[in-house]
Image (cartoon, rainbow, N blue to C red; front, side):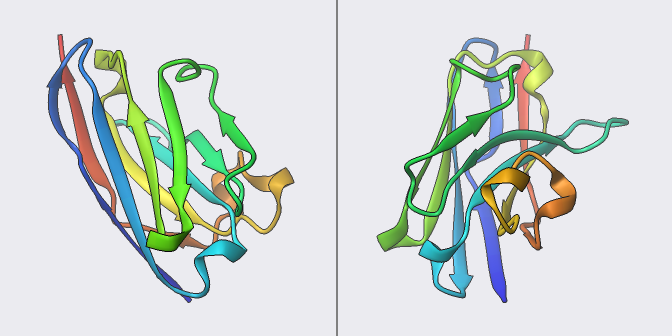
Length: 125
């Protein structure tokens, strides 16, 4: 079992930045990939970014590539999502997720076994 807790959301103006954190507990953190997803009102939950268990491979949605950076500190059992140049369309609840089973499955929300409760990010124009 893995428990996840996100933090760091909030209200920011367009062009600003935020860093989200997701603290994990339970199973050994360095044995599974981690991902970030987001869900805006009336929309499906969508993939944002993912990182492999060792941190060596990262994956991004086209909409955030070049603006967001995912990283992890295995010693702190924490994954981060650094967000720059935020846009109003980035407004959503952001969820971290754990253990998609393999690198081939990191893009699909259906693959992940564990989810956090989410943290709200609101970008004002």
